[in-house]
Amino acid sequence: MRRLSRKQLIWSLVGIVVLGGLVWGVRWATFARPPLPEAVAALASDELVTVDTARPLTFTPAHVPPTTGFIFYPGGRVDPRAYAGLMRTIAQAGYLVVVPSMPVNMAIFNTNAANAIIAAHPQIQRWVIGGHSVGGTAAALYVSAHPDRIAGLAIWSSFPAGNSDISELDLPVILLYGGNETGVTDQSVGARKHLLPPDTLYIRIEGGDHHQFGAYALTTEDDLATIAREVQHDRILTATLELLQRVSSSP
Image 1 (spheres, rainbow, N blue to C red):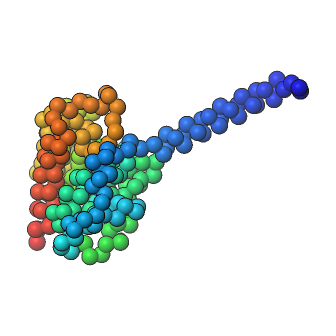
Image 2: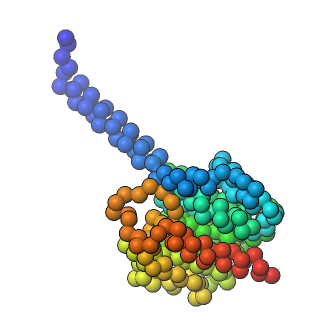
Image 3: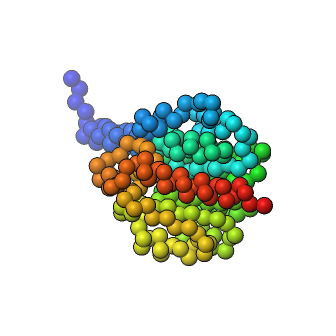
C-alpha cells in the first residue's frame, strides 16, 4: 500500500479539521431549542384560533377580524414554536399574532423582519412588537428605526441595546423579567431605564426565570424558576394583553 508523503498527510489532516469545523458550524447555526409537547399541541387550529405553521408562524382569531397585530421575535436559538401556547392565547383575545423565523435562529440578524409582516397585513391598523431575550433587544432596535410603524413594545426577559434609545417616543412599553434570572436583573434593567420612555411599566415576576418565557427544552443550569411555568405565563399574558388592549383602544 502506497504511503502518504508528509505533505499529503498534513493536508489530509487540515482537510479533516476544516470539514469538522464546517460540520460543527452548520450544527451550531441551525440548532434551536425544541418546543415542549404542550407548545406543539397549541399549534392545532380550532374554532377559536386558526394557526398557519408555515413561515412566519401566524395565529389568527377565528371569531373576529383583528385590527391590532402583535409581532413577536423569538429568543436566541429557540424554535419559534416554543411560544405557541402564549401566542395562541393572545390571538384568542382578538389579535393577529405573527412569529417570524430568524437567520441562524437569532433575531439580531434580521431586526427588520417586521417590515414584511406589516406589508402582508394591510388590514391591521396598529402594530405592537415584542420579543424574548435577544428577540426583545431586536424588537427595541426595530422600534428605534421605525417609530412610525409601531404603537407599543413588549420586552420579555431582555433590555434595549445602547443604540436603541426610544426614551423620547410617546409609546407604551412594558418590560418583564423573572426574579430568579441571572442575566436580566434589577441592576441590568435599571442601568438601561434611560433608554426607554419614562412611563415604561417594569414588571418583576417573583420566582420566574429566563426560559419560562417560552416552553422549550432546557439545560439543568437554566432551571432557576421557583414558580410553575403556568404561573409565569399567566403573569406574562396579563401584562401583554393589557398593553395590547391599551393600544387597540387608543384613538
